Length: 227
Length: 298
Image 1 (spheres, rainbow over the protein chains, first blue to last red):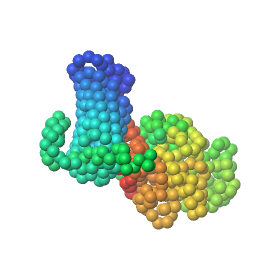
Image 2 (spheres, chains in turn blue, cyan):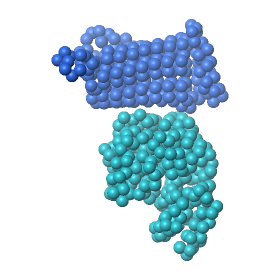
Image 3 (cartoon, one colour):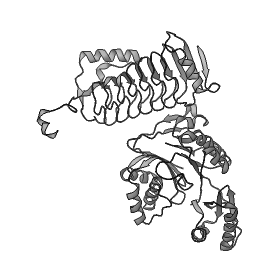
Image 4 (cartoon, chains in turn green, yellow):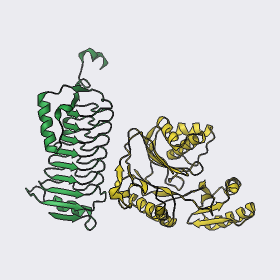
């Protein structure tokens, strides 16, 4: 375990040290101490290393992550794990807006609450939030799974494509073209796997599934005159 | 962008440190707003029952002249404490209206930053560190205070365009965002008798809340009404003689973090602004909900 102390080492230097392993198969372990809400911490990683951040961070923590496991022992600002490709990011506290935005792959786990626009435009990432999520979450979400153990805010899944949304608590309102869908065995199995990987103890049968009605952008021949 | 910091003390033993804590928070938010900075600080002082804070482009000439005029007007030596381009005039509450009227008529070049029982406002263009040093903010004590670092969008980088805005006695507002209906709302408020110093959108929000409170609303009620009448992006932090309020618009793009312990309530645009507050590790830290009014009164 290598300790990187942000009270002694500059942010760019810490990120450069982590990124120096990019492209390798290193399993090195790091702990970053004294993060003091720093922005863009542990971004652009591309190796199966493990990074623990001892405290809360600012914007864009663990952005563009590939292969690495990043755990934040605190809360994170806007845009955690933005555009993640693979690997795992775990936030022990809360996440601010647009957590996991545009993510292509990997698993983001938020143990607390995530605020507005969680999973906006997600493209294959899996997101598990143990608390609540804010309004406009999964807006234009294209692919992947968003699992929420708490409640969802207004306009969940507005203009959704093919992402799957699972909510155990209440949903304040569904966005345009987002509807509740049947929970089939395949979805129970999928949830079982996601919850196990996220280290969360919950019964998949308690969740409701939401997805796209697939009506919003479809061309209807009856409307031809409108074009 | 813009940066906001705020601190409302519950534990009076922290009051001597209010200015130092706010200064550290403000300077941390420099990269959110390097154009200008300002601070409103509320303190109780029996030797200063009422305070008027003024700003001058020529303090060396204006402040002695103002001091003389106040002494003649009130029949007692003026208490005028100069701090850089600003001066705080302490006087009996009964003399306040007369002195304010005199300043407005005889010293049109002076800008009245604030007036009230407790409030003092200091704001200038330049980096927050420079602005805080000019006014020795770190040495100030008080019960609550609000600071702002500005990255201008809706009006020019000037002293009067800096935040906080004060449109009523002991009231102030800072704003991160931009309002889209400020021109129409300003016209309506002018018809209601409100006076504006600038073309700034945030001043309209401040005047709107002042007008609501003149009509009988408390701070919470005024902020609640603002949700219907103010259109645009905003995170507001608002101060009154005894209170401190926070409001975010329903879309809530503009960042906000709050922390509360049994000693204080703190606001920061980012968590970075809060990291050195005493006991922050054990504080309840949360992101204020969109369209939800938060306010504390002592």
